[in-house]
Image (cartoon, rainbow, N blue to C red):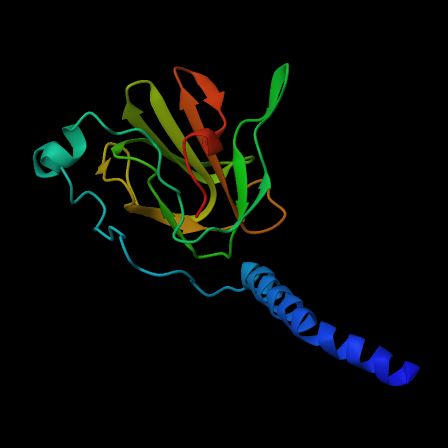
Length: 193
């Protein structure tokens, strides 16, 4: 009777254990996907326009509506935030690192003008966007930038693809927001999906 009672108690725990197993398998698949070379994520709400195809006149009200704050998630999927803004007197880490597979879409967090596209030893391939109203955003460690300096971009327009260039140990996006020259925590403006 003791064994039967023990078996019944263990059997009652099986549904909860199965739910936990499914959750863990889902998390494992997400982590495995971080190291996959395939492009992941949906293509909804993406602006895939050829470089240089937009001018101030073609942007119309979408660019000049006064609401160009960088407040949209810079990726087509959530990824995993692995490092936040660190400020210990002098800024040690000016933005947020988001682990994401190589080749994922990087999107402009807000409408603006591409102020800089380049490559350096720390940031690797990067894009800096001037949004106006005191805001700038930076997207670093890309595998490819798909915009040019002076180009006007719309909110959520694809501006590049994630990678692991510069000082990087794994594929991720380094995302910064600067307001009036001071780095701010991107997660104060942007909600992770």
